[in-house]
Image 1 (cartoon, helix red, strand yellow):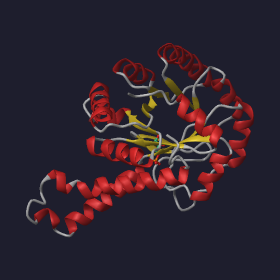
Image 2 (cartoon, helix red, strand yellow):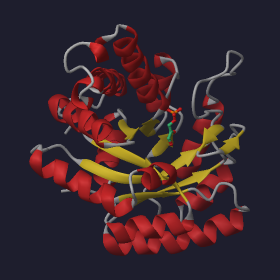
Image 3 (cartoon, helix red, strand yellow):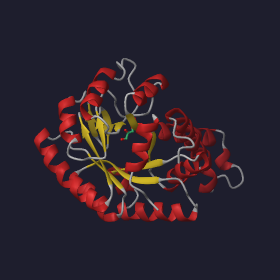
Length: 287
Ligand code: 13P
């Protein structure tokens, strides 16, 4: 059964580790992530962007697939199904469809409007026992066609949003989605500390987990980050393994064209990436 992310994140915050949110794109992705979480006895959050939701034929399809897998694969670790960077309407649709967690990304609204919309969604989520993530300070990079520059959040605004009763808070600290440019200045731990001082116990979320050096990840966790989002790194691992398979001509050998064979190296590569991240984040054995 899907669970809210609240308990797993509060435990992570107290235990000084982070739970990974891994974004899913299809059945192979979801299966690889769930298999790894179960093998490593790690809690996990499956992230679904609005674009990926559309690609997978809508939120109800996603909920059906994930619930089916939890049962058929006999998954025992805590799993949350979470809308990533949701719009107000998207969050409502996911709640309706059976997601156990949503992110409302109101970071592009003026703070007052972010507050109003977040307040309304917090109430709905609380009533249903779902977790809700809010964002302050837009995360840079490209996500579903929207490009942000990687702002640093205003700690006072973080406090305003945290006080609305959200479960976890994403604060921009110079992180961006996708690959980091060579001239990236790194995470702003100054901002992270200032945000933490304002929001107290609230588990913090670090987006753009792809390509952040291990020492920065560990420092971020020590300063209150309890959830780390990874998307691009699984995509790159899948791409590289699939490319190797085709370039080696394996799709032309025997039944190598069978999608169950063609997609297998990519699926294994996703598993390896997820394992590496869970080990780095410290969530192994915490289920
Ligand atoms: P990356 O694609 O950079 O790993 O970021 C993922 C993310 O933050 C999803 O919200």
